Amino acid sequence: MKKKWQNWVIVIIVFFAMACNNDDIKITSEDSPTAGTIHISVDESFKPVMEQQIKVHHSSFPNTKIEVSYKSEADCFRDLQQDSTRMVIVARGLNKQEDRFFENQLSYPVQYGELAYDAVAIILNRAGKDSVFTFEKLHKILSGQTSTTVVMDGNSATSTVRYLRDTILHGTPFGPNVVAAKNSEDVLAKVAQRADAIGFVGLSWIGDSYNATQLEYLKKVNLGLVECTKCAEKGLYARPSQATISRGQYALSRPVYYILKENATGLGTGFMNFMSMERGQLIFRRASLVPAKMGFTKRTGTIKNAD
Image (cartoon, rainbow, N blue to C red; front, side, top):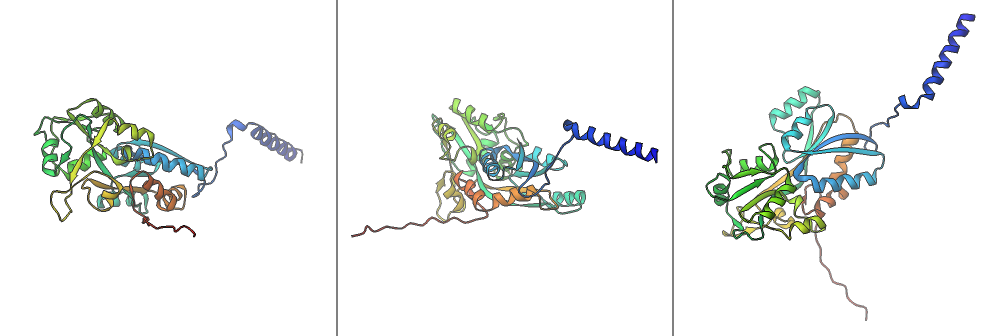
């Protein structure tokens, strides 16, 4: 009996010692669509609009924490293979090989789909004379057949580089005149300084007319026009904008994809739903991207004054 009493005393002492040592106790909220913490990786060319998405989401759901890393498309896909990264935002979905790989690795299918439509914008120095581009002309420039300096948002791992290689060069290498900047912001800075250079950035960096920083960029650079390859009438050219993307007039448009690893309804699903529904789609729209999940129509009307 005495031994049992001593054992209970020891248990009580240990319990209180653990309770008093608050530094060693970590309380975590249950992961749900409106609470918890997740790590995501985002293609750097979508950084401005995704910063707005995360900012509004956090203000709407204060019990959530979305820890984001902005990096190249290839690095985003590498992160997706790690347990710590649950979602990536990139410029393409999974191919069949990647789809099978993740399903075999996780034992459940990965979700992915389009959130919006973006564009690769051509930017030029204000002093640049040539602002109209056909696909043939872009091929000559990117393959090194001209002396024009081309500034990209990084090396071969970025989505912009991959897109231009696939769309314009059809897999052939870039010319020696193509140079790499640190990121999209650095592309804008370099082109603003050099009259002989052109650059390529996502529209999210230069198309938001509500963003004071982007309006300052537009005082230093111009947007190039690209031939409309889908227009019935030949000789038409378009600058990247919400209107020209939605009408199929700007030829260098591309999707914004989410890819989500989640076998239960957690915060990743909640954030994906937020971006897919009205508030998130309006954020894409405000940034001059085209929402993929919801159609927003513009209606005009008149108001008659009362007699």
